[in-house]
Picture (cartoon, rainbow, N blue to C red):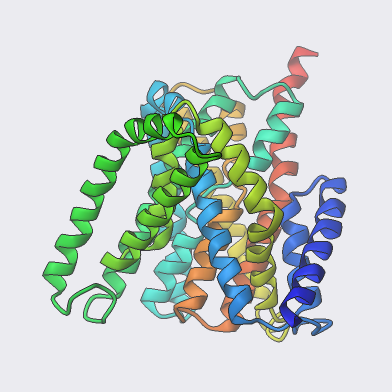
Length: 386
């Protein structure tokens, strides 16, 4: 019964604080994070981390990455592949290099420093899309570049995370065997399995449509994604790669919109708020004072690395200076993927609790600042036309 009480408190608080966040033109996820550290040990200490909360949180991660794959527009990616791939590749490499090197020279272990760089490699464009829509720029050259790059960006970030997880665990009992070469072969085989699933998914969903059982397509979609998650973890890769590519496979099917609606309803009603709240439960303010300089430096690098990558990559394809500024600003926002990666790092003890709390603060700050920066450059772009 204690868990039921916690469930009520978490959902109610997430709903209220999420609503306050949206009223302040910030993503609801900020309110859900605040919910965690207000209710948790950091402030009120009403809710403690528990095994059931952790299970709900893990399901939230899986559904969140599954939805990210479902919402990735591969048609847009194919149409603007060179532009999107260039922006995304530089946008993934630059944060890993700049932030990784800075963390290393700060005295952080190399493995931990690289992982922190990967945390800030992914972009969340959900906020940027809202700003672009409001300003009528969503289908402009800059808006299209941001959307296309975001698809590649997420794919590259998920692959980088899985490769890092696999490589960092060599020699340990992460894979199904004690033979590193055999484990690596299984990981490569799993990538081939993903391609096979991608090709077979339309036929699988066609079969689901013929079934008389209610919600058969949704059930088969969940079976597919959980199977890929289980397989990914079994061969020693990150579970998120299975969830994300499961979503990509289902994106090509006619049922993807209905599945996305159903899974969104399930996920955002219960499991996804638990994930963000669980992150907040692990945040403490113990290190905020002496880590303030580190947080400021990381925030600057998180903003600058994505901005430079988007801006100068766009200029290579003939974009104007301010169009490049818009693309760069649109790539700044971190969000769900960055939070997922940081939470995975904390769960695998890749960095200390103090560093984890600092990273969450940096993600929140950069996410809050990004729409203001983007809006600034869009107004500059529109000014000569007024």
